[in-house]
Each structure stands twice: as structure tokens, then as C-alpha cells.
Length: 350
Image (cartoon, rainbow, N blue to C red; front, top):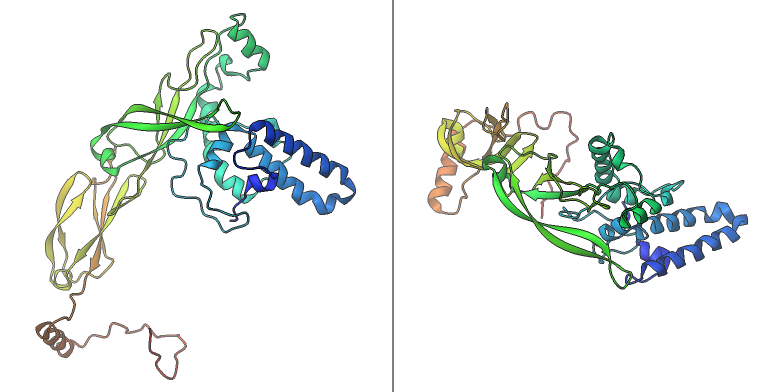
């Protein structure tokens, strides 16, 4: 995927006001319109300009785009920074500028999945409510003047990261949220606020926590919208999560794997003793039922054995390894070369 520098495409500075962005888009759109005879040549350029405007003219997308940072260049290979949109509040929904625009892979990766999911959730929670139909400028003006029915506030959505340990125990957390606004200089910026959230025991990836009345403000006496927190786990140095199942690699000595052993294994909420069966091999998976994320039924904990070989860093250690070499008729590569093309002379690896 290639990075899109929307500011460069529109020919504006990163400090440009919304008025300047609108002015430059109209100028470029007019240029492409005048060059209609070169439509086949200019079509890709017009699509790029339209996409750039669709992002920078939209307060929400504009602010989210700025979160990526400034170190990227237009056309550079790009991978979104991990959890770049954590705590960023958005409403979702398309506007008229999207009509007929064939968006790039970059746009879809940055603004497609999460926003579409938010729109789906919003439709599920608000679709049957006549107070959450499209709101026109006249509706807003009448609501401000108290001349119209009350208008409920919009629902807001954000992704928040929690620790795996919170899902095992439950926790009370203060979470910082960032909201896009148009400031007094007519530029998009972010304002922050903190909310206190109870993380329930058994929380899982993709789960939504609803905070009633924490979304957009209502108008004309209408109720405030709700805030939906979509949960995800922070990367953990030991554990990996797959749905309700949790896994981790546990180092074992060669003799523990060969002869069997009882070892202590850490868990997100404590520890547990497990039996390593004799003749275990590296990568063997031992499943502990019901020790994953609490639920009904709970997930499982999978222990993956990682055999760690002691270093031959002393004469005594070298002697032991030499005794093993003579005692075993063991070929670790038996059958490994079957069907492979072999070189006539060995090569030295560096």
C-alpha cells in the first residue's frame, strides 16, 4: 500500500484552513473541467484530488488522517502505525462528496472498516427511532430556537485498548478520548476528555461498551447520544489472544521435554502447574480447558513448549554434549532432504 499525501495532492500546507482547502479544491476541479478534452489522461488526477478533498474537507476524516503523522511521503510504501486511532471518537456516515469517487486502497484501509462498522452499529441502535433521521440545516436552526421537535444527539464511537489482565479480573479505568473540532482559526484540531469506564470480567476483542448520554449533545431539549467503546487488547509480551482462547510459549529444558516434568506456568490472573509429558517435542501444544478468557463457556489456555538448549560454554558442558553425541544414534535431519535439490559442496553461512 502507498501513502497518500492529501495536502500535497491538493497543493495546500498542513496548516491550511478549511476555507483554503475548499478554495483550492474548487480551483483544481475547475481546471479538470476545462481540460475535458484530456479526460482520459487527467482522470486519475481528478480521482486523487476528489479523494483528497473528501478527507480534508471532512472534520472527522481530516483529524484522523493527521493522527498518522508527518514522516510519510506521497507514494511511499506505507503501513498504518499500530493502534493509531486509539481513543479517537468518530460518528461515521458518508457525505455527498463521496458520490462517484473510486477510493484508493490507502483510503479504504484508513477509513473503510472501522467507520463502516460504526455505521452498521448506529443503524442497529438508532434505525427504528424516528428522532434519528437525517437532520437538515433548517432542523438544526429550529432546534436552537426551540421551534421544532427535540433532536437527539448523535452516537459516537471509539476504539480503546485494554490489558488482557483486565478481561480476567474486571477493572475500573480512566480512558482518554480525542474529539475533532474546528477551532477559532478555521482549522481542524483535537480536544481531549477523560471518561471512567468499568471493564467487565470476560471482556473480549470487538465487544462494545455503551456509555449512555456520553455521545453528542442533543438539541432543543433532545437527549444526548451514546458513546460506544469498541474493545481491543494491547499487545502482550507473553500472551496471544484468539477469540476467547489464550496462548503462550513456555521455555523448557531438553531433559524436561525428554523425561517429563511438572512446571509452573504464568496466567493473566495468577499461575498454574502443568505436567509436561515425557518425549515432548518443541512446539507441542498443551491445552488447559477453561483457563482462557472467562465466559460462558470460557476459553482455553494453550501452552506451547519451547525447548531451550543450554550453551556449551565450559569444558564440562562440552564434555556432556560429546557424551550425548556418542550415546545417541539420533539424526535430527532424517528424512529432511528427501526430494530436495542438494548442492555438491557445502557453503559457509555468515
